[in-house]
Length: 135
Image (cartoon, rainbow, N blue to C red; front, side, top):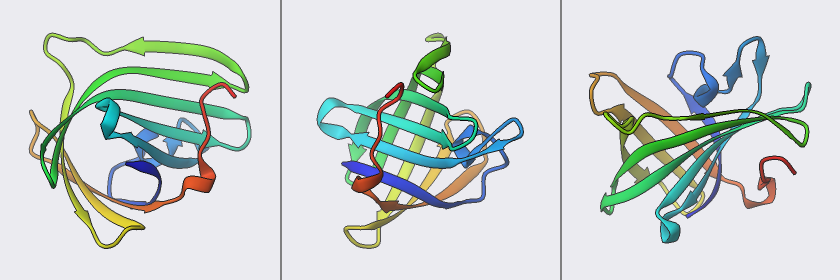
């Protein structure tokens, strides 16, 4: 649980790695296992772009989570400018293998269940950076 800032990934440029078109920003994860929910967030300072990918969470074991994508929302300042729902048949699913190095640092190995690539993400707990889309 908690709010986490991405420090590193080996994923190619995409919103999940901090790049949206020509813009580069910070990536965060808001983990809410008590609600079976996660939100991946992108925050670009200028222009003030915020994006969020919401997903359902199923905890398979202590170190394995399955993530089913729900939707993406994009904001320019306080205005929602785009929303896209992911298809349910077949659903877009990722499997995460999580290693906690301590209370503040974790390594996540993310894999699309229909593809061979595995991407590494290193995240640091950063509750003070918490923000809400559209605020």
